[in-house]
Image (tube, rainbow over all chains, first blue to last red):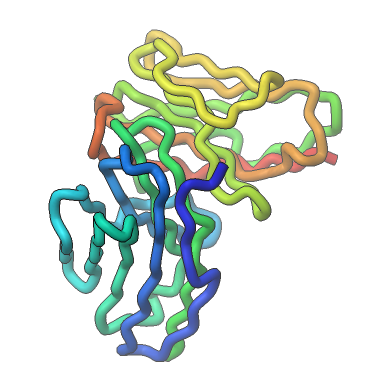
Length: 111
Length: 114
């Protein structure tokens, strides 16, 4: 059932570190790859998204790297802060229907 | 605040019962999605509606049903509830449910089946 595999399950970094979360997908029809951030007790919120026609997208401290041939994409968080501590989900969809989510990565940024 | 509202926030019920979860999308959004989030299954897409019509179906059980009303709010009906249905249920909305749109998630309804 799961078509998007996400790793690691949890990640602890020091403030200022660069956590990297990786995702791999199976379905080559996927054409939209968003990352969501979820704080406890809240719904997921879109962080950044990429289409397969670009290899990298940067928004503020967040960067997605995309490797179409390997069917992998990753999220890098530059200069991480304690406020970035949250659960991060990668996702993939085709035509915005039936979005498939990774299992999530719980990130802790220590002060 | 995403602009998507969900009620109730919490729901406790017994096995075999039926509940209705309600969602109001962001103003102007025509498409509504329902997701289930549980510890063992993660975030699972259930169903999508666009302007009152079902557009896509995911892992929605036959005991579950949904609809979107003319005012665009949506309801998810869960019946013959089982312990395993305990989860967070999220509603999301987007402008027209096409590729590459941002889906805005509501705060969720936490369902506990005892």
